[in-house]
Image 1: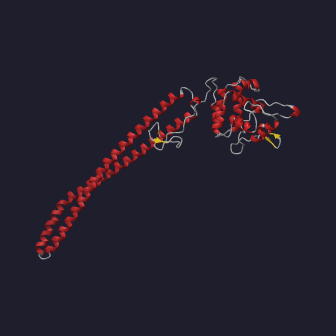
Image 2: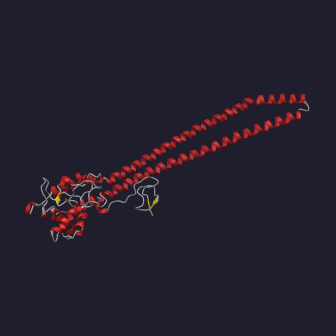
Length: 345
């Protein structure tokens, strides 16, 4: 069992996404090698701040509960007084009935006693009315106090909701932390955002742009075999990792590599013949009815596209025209597959 870093509620890792008590995001962090070195210190400060807010809200809730308990005791005491008054009145009525029954045998004396009792009750009536008014006033005060407590509880609930919102903001800030290669310093925040939002077409274009930039071709152009051969392994891992993560294993260079191997290709990017290559192209949906699809004809939909359909950025990189005017097709992918082998990915 693990504990929530904010409220210390126990939970089972990988089975819950948010804390059932404070709402803190409990989803696992990405692999540590994908997170900047300074991230943990910032995360500790954020969690410490969330703990302080959480403890303050809990203290306010406990104070409100103590006030409610005190007022409930006062209300119980008032209720007992009213019950005592009601019992006393009932006893008085019983006495009057007993006196009436007894004095029926002696009417003159009974009338005198009744007059005396009536006179006594008339004298006590103002005091009784004052007591009743005092009780009613006390009840109104108790009601006002209860309403004040209810209002305080609502404020506490609003504070708890505000804390949950702050925790959500912290979680979103963590999720939006720029993913920067520690070796080359390139920022993949935009690619991460496009993939997370499911904008696969723009993400494909951004992938091409970033790969060209990493290769030092800031003015555009093509990636050739030597460019990819010298491409940083860590940048390739970050780009591929983002595609695999946000597509739940549906897209990515590593997914395409596995499909290529399953079709008979070699891990180093070589292939015994065009039959294997065409089988791969048909498998990922880049060739339909023996016809190459242009980049604009591809399917930029996670639900409709075949597994491994993306990234398909050859129109932004290198496609080699060979015999009979046909595209041998996506030669850069073979280079990338061989790079995966060299990088042990």
